[in-house]
Image (cartoon, rainbow, N blue to C red; front, side, top):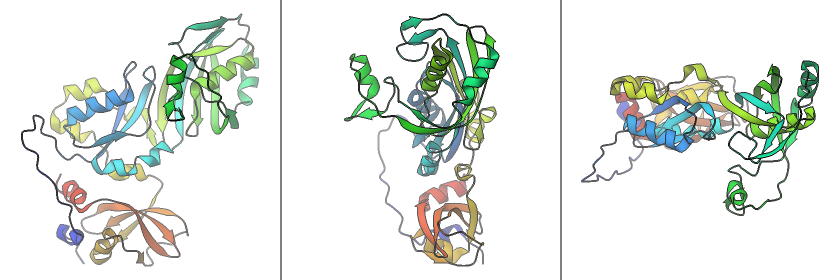
Length: 329
């Protein structure tokens, strides 16, 4: 049975208001842009610049990078924002350089120098210390972070000269490699769980080495299944035509890597979009598993679902308007 566009919209469409006198004409844009964030720009500033270049109506990012950090920043547009949380929770990969012998107030090159120590680190000592930071470790979040305490970010307390007691948190370092690139600098490649502070990792490694350290550079090279090699820069986007910019977008379902696909026929697709559980024998599914659900013809993402007792229980769903815009793009 062919699934026509109108068949997907048995649900009631939301009314949209028409604004008059708008100076900037925005448009519906759906997808994921992998941006190589430059140094010195906040994640939100980078997002707003890309949003302006694409003339997009709705956008968000999947976790911030410090202004001093560079690298992979996935930006979600339109329907993709509904699944951005999945990449907030994804494992991350970083390339970092730690300067040995100098501790700073912020744990990176932006802070004031707190202490200087002599450096006497061999490659053998470095490898021995790195082994101690693999697996599950406890980290005390840095004061210069966006973590909140009583409704205020920790960096706000830090700027006011107030030190707040922080509870150590468990994070996972999946892989950690490092090498001396100078007598007083080490380059590290880290794959870690969400919530890991690489600045803190660098400081803690420096303490174990006996000389202290701070991060002199930080670059995110991966998050989930995305790699920095897939990225585009703001300068490249600026030089493109509008069609070329839109061609840089990955489809919304790229955020659902690792989700098995379930495909529904027209009748089941329409009911699913109404939030109705569906029962069927589409795949040998696992109870509790999250899946990506697609319409059959045309093939289009409908949303996510969880398998509960052989039923598809709707999760985050695209709206009929989202689907119509994606199909007409």
